[in-house]
Image (cartoon, rainbow, N blue to C red; front, top):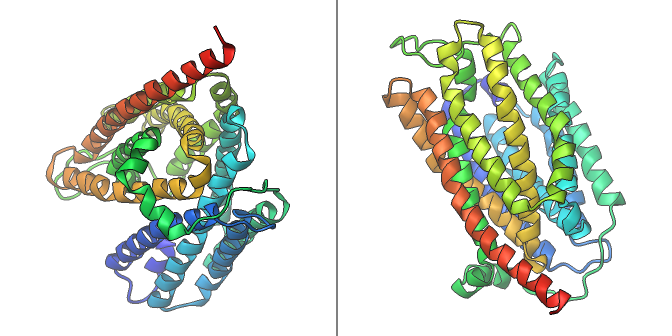
Length: 397
């Protein structure tokens, strides 16, 4: 999308920044509203599927229209509307997972979802080989439409017997202190989610610069690995990441279901933080062979990242209350969007004003990942206490 806009007339970097910001903000607001409305829908067709079908297919239709518009204003407007519809569909799709999956199988279900995401990455690389930018949009739109149609038409939702409530009143009630106390485990997880994405946002915006640039042309400062984009070295790095995710997704899913989700996420997050911080060291070894060094560091990073994503999703689905799953999962989208703001600013300040600032962004990102762990631990202790007490009561003296 950004490359496509960059080829248009009247392009400025500010346009892309404006578009990304508008997409993030409108998508975050839409996620909470769509999630809460779906919580309180009582249609025979399904409360989540209606959003998945209508929101998903509408967003892909707009994707077909994007290459037809040559005005930047129209493209930005279409992209914002597409984000609203797409986010509504994805929040309800994410809420559907715990609706139709038992708690004992959430690990495998989230693993399958990540497996599909990895396949989508491979498909994305293949689509990028198409010469015409219009064909890229058409191919991506066709694939997305197929996915939304399959879920919207063929998945069965169980009927909800409880009476629906007004979605706006439900949202207001959620932010009351009493409601937050009753769902303290989820809100602790929400805080953890915020620090996680602050950390990730410290380095993600500068990832391509870090991989491709060897030295800063102005200052001679050591930036990163200096991999070649034209020779496909960066593509190899992302391909290795994808393959690792494909190989480890399903095994991790089964393992999470056999163990405690909290503990698995805590261990995964700790190793994820370590492998993220270690990325700061890659420029020191690039004289050997930058591509080999990149692969050696990306493998453990990809393994721990995969473990974190799956266990995080399983725990999120487990903690979200059944009556407010859509709204609470929408809150996660909002928190992730808000976390990007300080994360990007921190990473930008480090890169701008400090020698080796691009490397420091990985170290600072790792620190934020570590900060997120205690909030998982606190909710884990509370959750396990109630779980253990429940087992004792059920088992009897």
